[in-house]
Length: 138
Image 1 (cartoon, helix red, strand yellow):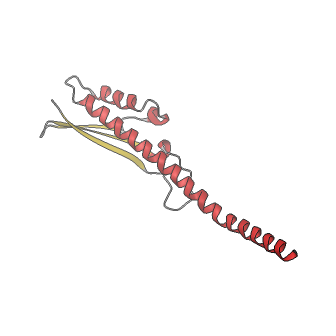
Image 2 (image 1 turned 90 degrees about the vertical axis):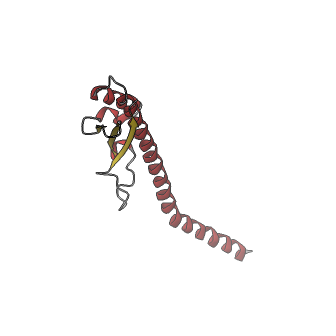
Image 3 (image 1 turned 30 degrees about the horizontal axis):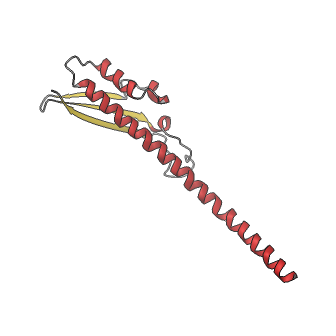
């Protein structure tokens, strides 16, 4: 009877050690998935904002202020919308083909969680989320 109890205790100890070895890797993967999800969500929002700005820029009464207002309005629910300025929103009229291009850039650390900054290659500092949308003027 003592042998079975010893075997159970050894197996329990090895399971605990396996968990202690695997748990940090699992947590790192979980954090990476959360960070990737927030980054992709922010990139999608920036793309939508560029599209809203391009739609506004195609109107005959379009000005830079109205385009910038449309971009900021499209990002109204995001905390980084208030940090957008002339450096982040660029409007280019393309007279050769009657189109307009709107480019929106946002600092990635303001838009997404930077929880893996200590991991080499996964730091978002200094990176930008950029989206460009080209629309033809009617």
